[in-house]
Amino acid sequence: MNFTDATIEDIPTLAELLTLLFAQEPDFSPDLARQQEGLRLIITQPEVGRILVARRDSRIVGMVNLLFTVSTAMGGRAAILEDMIVTPEERGLGTGADLLQQAVRTARECGCLRITLLVDRNNIQAQAFYRRHGFTPSAMTPLRLDLTLSPPK
Image (cartoon, rainbow, N blue to C red; front, side):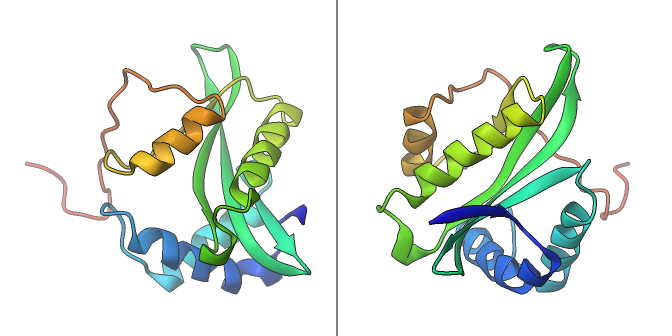
C-alpha cells in the first residue's frame, strides 16, 4: 500500500469513490460532473487542499480530502477532513486507518493545528472509527445554507 497526492488523471476513479460515499450519506446525492469539478479545483489549487489516495498495486482503493482554512480560535491554519472512503473490499483491512494517519501527518506537515470533520449522526460505525483515532465530539452543531437555491425570504 502506498499513499500519494491525487492527480488530474485520478479524477474519474475518485469521482466513482465519491458516488459510493454520497450514496450512503443522506445529505448528498451523487452528481458525477459536480464531483469531478470539485476534485479538479482541489487538485489544481494545492493552497486550497490536498486529496490523498491509497493505492494497492497501482489501483486506487481509498481517498481522503483535506481542505485548508484558518482557525482564529487556534491562531493558525486548520484542516477540514472531507470525503474519506475506501472501497468495500478494503474495509476491515486497516486501509482506512492507514489513510487517516497519512491525512493527519499531512495536515501537521502543512502547519495545521486542528482537523475538523463531519460524520452522519446515525453512522455509529464511522463515529467509533474516528474516536479510536483520537477525534472527539464537538459541542458545535453544523448548519448549512445552499447558495444554489433561492434566497430565503
